[in-house]
Length: 259
Image 1 (cartoon, rainbow, N blue to C red):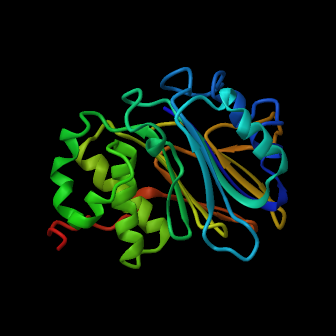
Image 2: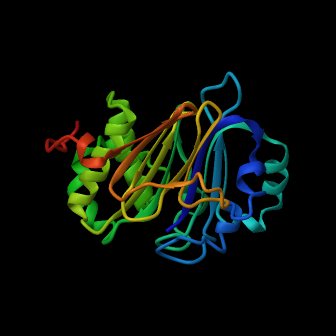
C-alpha cells in the first residue's frame, strides 16, 4: 500500500518528476499500474526536498489526496530541487493521525517512507517495543506501523549504523516478529538513497553522473527502468546503483532492551 519515489539529480521543479510524466506519482494516487495491494492512494501525501547549502529538508504533507490540493500544484510548479522523496498513501487504517501519518517522516537530514503494512499491528510489534528507548516511542510522529518502523530504523542510524545495514536489520527484525509484513523502505539524506524491496514492487532508473530515481513503479515507459528483486537492499547515489540481498547486510538483531 502506498507509492513512493526518491530522486537525486539536477535541480529542477518538483512537478517535473512528480506531476508531468505520463505515469507520475501524482497519477499513481488514483491509477497505479503495479500496486499489488490496494487500488487508490488517497489517504494523504507528502514531499520532502533539499535546498542548496541546507542539509535539513523541507516538507509539505497533507491528509487528503494529492489531486485535491491546489496549493501543491503551485508549489510543484515553482519549487526546484536536486534531491527529493515523495509518497502518496493508502492507509492501513483510514484517517489514522491524518497529516502526521503521511510520509515522508523526517529527522535531521533524513527523509523516510514505508510502502507496505505490518499484519496484526500494533500487537505484533509488541515484542520489539523494549528495543527502543522510551523517548523514541513517545516522540513518534504518528501511531502507525510506518512510524514505528521509522523509529526502529532511526534508532539504528543515531547509534552510528550505516543506512544500508540500518534498513536491512530493521526489515529482518520486523519480519521475524510479523513474517507476512511488507517492508519496502525508502531513505535519503539528499546525497544517497537507500531502499528495500520486501513484498511489493520497486524499480530504479540510473543515468550515471546525472540522475538516479528509485520508485515503487516507473513513471514512464523508458526501457532503462530496472526492477529490484524481492528481499533486496538498494543503495544509490548520482553515480549509480548497487543491489545486495538484505540477508547479506543484516546482522543478528539485538535482544537486550535499550535504556
